[in-house]
Length: 347
Image (cartoon, rainbow, N blue to C red):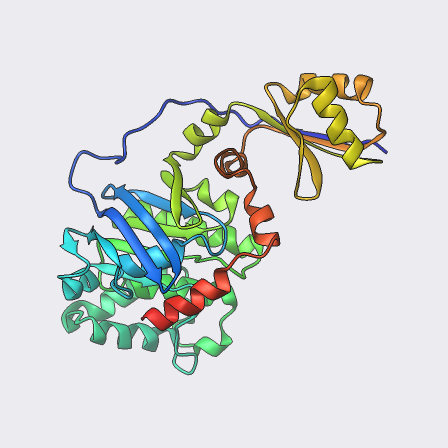
């Protein structure tokens, strides 16, 4: 049976400047490079993030996103280049940078034998949060992430989403200027992922904080004011999600057929299209996918089993800049485990 689904999401905006505001950057990097022996994990990144912006790093596992965050958070030293966070140099003013940032690691770092409130109390003492206002601040951030009623429960009893929310609360406790979140929803179910982003949206409205997040989920990147798409240690594109999609300008048509190899040849010869296999389907880009479908059924000699058409997505942006989709890169087997091991070694 032939299946046709069409997503007509609207796009179309002009290009923006590197920062969203006119003041000093909350995060700034110039020529940032990180090598581990012969492996170059970060390859010359230039970056400006405006105060109050929600900025995202989008890319496959192993692209260099976590290594970059580790440099910006003073956990890893850059091989070359420079970076400033909240106005402080990450190499020369490490203590000042750490006082002004919050960090939610990709791996869980809570003490599961303590209660939620005890985890925050311990963090507050480490960061020198004034005792006079510490209790009020703990209540404020716990209410913000919906955990005030569960503050007395040991973290062992928390669900994965609750633990993530507690880590976000902990990162906010000392009122940082920049909050870094490294893959904050990895391993969570879609509903919990959506709730985390809802909390982050509320946070952005109430705390007036700069949020810097890494993710390899397309839908999550849509929540950011701007994103930088990373691949193989480089930034390949940077703009608002809408503008990046508008620059692609074409619909993506994916089909499965009785003979995918023959259909690729037919699409090239009959329509002059650069067809290729992506995500296990024959994929082409055309200006108007809905209008192309009748032509496809009329003139392609290979029997078609299914067709999907969608307006440009961030995965199409990644495809346009790299020749592969993020899922293609990850299914081919990225070097994320190697880079993660090297990053831990580098600390």
